[in-house]
Image 1 (cartoon, rainbow, N blue to C red):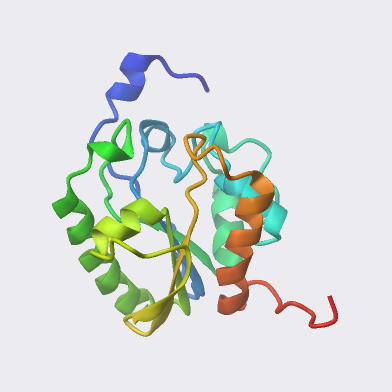
Image 2: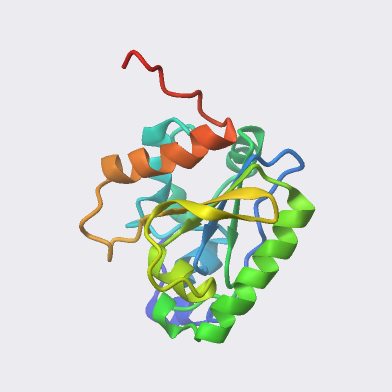
Length: 194
């Protein structure tokens, strides 16, 4: 489903719904929807984004054939059935994440805390260290499990899967995403013999 630049720009500031079921264990939280995501009503939907390939490579979700056209109802049901939820710190779509103001990210962290209290996942994983640092006012934070919790949920930060984050590969993203998935019980723990 190719879009013209003008078509994509018409989705600026559009919000897409959270993808969260009643038994969410792992809540993945992106920065904000891109224009392609807003156009398809699907988080991380840009064809160059490595989010879904990394989730599939980690075994967190089944492989999705082509997410660039958006999720089908069956795709959404598969995500929910795995105990995985997807949301954003800021819900308005922009062409680039750096178009967001710091106050929007901080307000997003507050909303995420409210939603975490309501949805009660075991683990919340923020997808993107730069956004996490700004939203949670933790300028020296590093990826991985954080020392604090978020309303009782383990708090993790994982790398951003955008093509702009060129030093990560699908394999390295999959390894990073598998860690909070194991902590949430979405994936089995590692076998100590391995």
